Amino acid sequence: PTRRAGAPPPANGKIQDAEDPTRAGARAIATHAGATCVTTYDDLPTTLDVAIDRPITHFDFVFVAVKTYAFESVRAEMEASKISYDVIVLAHNGMCAPVFDASKSARASMPQSWDIFPTPGEGCGYGMHVRNEDKPWVLPDTPHGRAAKRLLDTCGVKAVASPEFEFLVLQKYFINGVANLLAVIGDVDCDGLLANDTLRTRMGRLYDEMYSALKQPHREGIAMAPDNFRDVVFQWVASYGAHYPSSKQDFDAGARLEIESLNGYVVRLAESQGLPCPENKKVLEEVRSMIEARDAKAKQAVSAR
Image (cartoon, rainbow, N blue to C red):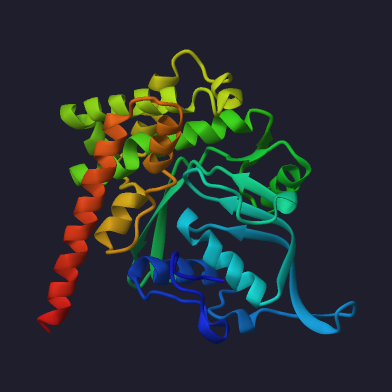
């Protein structure tokens, strides 16, 4: 099912949906490829659970790809709609406490970014540019991770269940941590971040504070990091090229931003250990101020109509 991340729980099983070009394009591409796209939980197939004598919707696999702040709403929606599953794969940025059944969960780290664009008169009317398409999804080397990996293999999606998962998740987190919110502040894409000396210097300070704050709480993953980890993180940011990080896209779209599970997580870890974290705090303050100004401007525009 498709839903707008962060939307309130749906009434009568209705999945909240925003009519925007990217979502319309994603739906068109998926439908053209043979997928079934639904907009209400009521549209999902059901089977009779004889143990409880009522219909349920059961999936072998559920993939949840929303912002971390929307997890609680998604879980509530699924529970209200009696959706059950064997494995739930959580594809997200940032760090957050477990929300779904940990005994059935596997996190996935995706190195790709997607840009959807209109192609009038061609195919389904939309095309998609995928960056880092050659790099695999990374899952934990656990029974659920390996099961999800096998499923992705059958779908033609590159994936690996890696014993280095804890490090690879941290690597993606560092990439998002030095780039996402700073791209909002600088109004730039990934190329622009690295091309601007001031922003690149700030990226370095963010990295240093992140490493210091995560070194002990995430020591298992940090222990696997190479000596040139800083360079690796910056090279990954460069690999996204002219792509705007998701936080920047959300800001421009007037949507809620994922803050607390990104740099907010770093600040909380640093404070709990008595470590300084001025650059991450400054980024949070700047972004929150920008969001407040953006939303106030949007309200004024609505009032003026």
